[in-house]
Length: 384
Image (cartoon, rainbow, N blue to C red):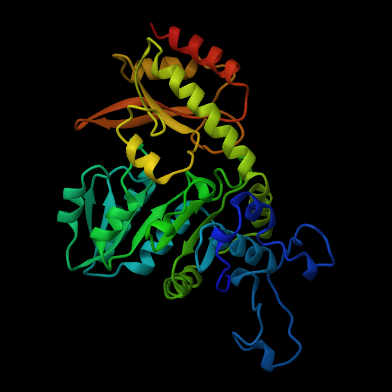
């Protein structure tokens, strides 16, 4: 939890990344906050044991370590408060459960994270919540999808499958009083702040770029309004959400180097994506920073950079060609995760003109780009 924050806009984001959540005067001058591993909290008296009487009541409800992380995230995302969750998916599901009830409708983008869509279809529908869909690049479809029962709009920016982009401020204007929930894992608060564009809630899988080392599982929600924070916090406690001190500490550690890592991810991804876009074995690369990408104008209008994740379609290729390409990789790993220091590849289902095709998703890490090009070139030439 965190109190009303000092807007990060008053300080350079690189400075905020290195200082947020570090109240070193409160822990004997050490640079980093201590790692509080704890469940039971001891009290000085019977009266202090009452819920709310003391700052900390039980480890599952928060520790100084998780509070330091939440304070940092709220400041970075220009929000009022933040909650840490046990995973990125847990952040999504807890927020949606807090906003949606029987008889309500949730409007979700078609290119959202597949697990989020499965939760809506498999869980929220069973609880009496109707699910409507829209495409990020179809503002007319979005407007038509809103009803007087729409309780929330959920989207990833860019879309998790096709990397499509919308102008968030325009979408928020059309949504009116309906809260817009945006996943900002791909860009991170270093490159984009959805709350500045009108989003009510910003979601993160901290396992990705913010953790940055593929060694933790953690999520978070950042809120523009304290009322939304309190609403979701109540649900979070009811469903038993908890974050371990070690994972929170790893996320705090990751924040300190996020700027230099994201700059490198962005530069390297632009390099590799541009090279692939001209490769004879590649039909199309889906990456908004590329000139000519259908989301380029919307990306350029809002973002100061980009995550290093993108997808590509092989020229005339089918799933067998994608399998051959991925199996032909040597330096690049095969894995479903992304946002770490290592480059990984996996199959991805992309929709183009209503037709679904299997392509390849790449998360570009911190390796030398010439080494990555050689590895990709050898794997792609093996598909011919």
